[in-house]
Image (cartoon, rainbow, N blue to C red; front, side, top):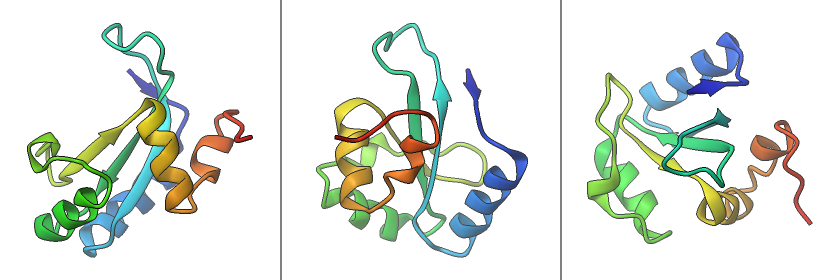
Length: 102
């Protein structure tokens, strides 16, 4: 279940991804399979090769890409999410949800 994002944030993420940019969208997320995680970051790009190459630098496997609707994306959560967002200078994605970096 996803919550904690605005329609404007969702539309901006979609537009960036459709333009072939690496787009980040972080929102609250609850999934009983991952009880320790309260958020997920979806990293999308319609340029699949660009998305794969981006993911490789962080050890993400191309088979982890979700091909749902028009927005192929990786799901990031937990420590990997935190590490990648710091590397990408996107800490604000978690800060807005109340997750503070130390």
